[in-house]
Image (cartoon, rainbow, N blue to C red; front, side):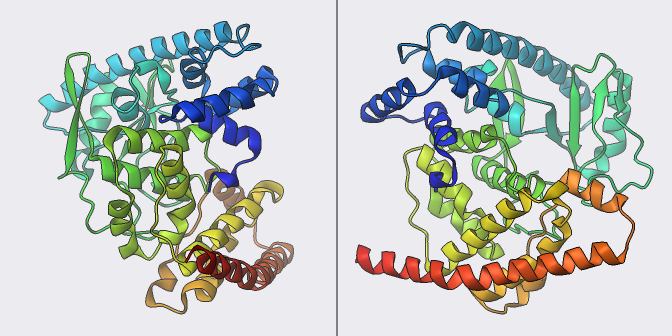
Length: 396
């Protein structure tokens, strides 16, 4: 599934992956020697990976890359300094919260930097995401304001982030160094429901700077990472987010079958399949939990998101509802859960969509796009399904 990447992006992913055999390193060094180092660095900058790229390249000793290492090292050192400052501020806030009976659970970057990456500076962070119980929202707001933090903007209708209501408006310090994104739940039940995942009950402890922090248990964290990429980013994530998952797989020894046991109950395995395959492949593991319907479903989800990504300002985001329901009918049959299928909700698309007034042109464009997607599915699906069947016969 890493074939979904273009060659340069795949090379960067393989270079930054957590597990490499001696043969893999030999192949990487050969491939890296055949490209311009500046191209790799430029892509790493875009994908938020300079510190991790430096960490791996410094041991490869590839001719032509020595001049680039000081620049990458500078990125690594600056990111380390910034992360230490962020986490020390978070540490102080956490102690104050505990005194008020507020349990803070670290999510995403901060938790990963403290755990799966063996150096605090390897994981760049835009902000720090935390999870608190809904009943503690007013207290945590007061606490942040006491620490010279303020909301980035006024949430006038309490429906920030396209009505998901899974977290409050981000708060930021006056010096703009620390930005906190406070979540009150991991998943929006309108999109997907994981009945067995209970983040506030199954916490995991990590340590940093002589302090214990709570985070999600490894499997919940992995599934939340999948969900965040698929729903929040509409698969338009940075490569860093996929590398995050591969490091979690490697560090905790996650088993793909257990992950599928959670997501199978949601009937959304097809949505996550490309990401699961990619992250485990980067970690040296090949999941075997595949069948023709699931693979076809995954292919259609991914195709839809990629096609939508290249539309002008992604105006058709709201069409993903009917389009994905068509995909569901074609791949899995008419099922009761069809009405609750995923809806992709990209932030910029949502803002654009809400800013537009209704009109005949907008409705016509939406209708045409639905028809185009339906035709693509009807043409592509039989061909891809036959391909899967042929591959299945050949492997027997």
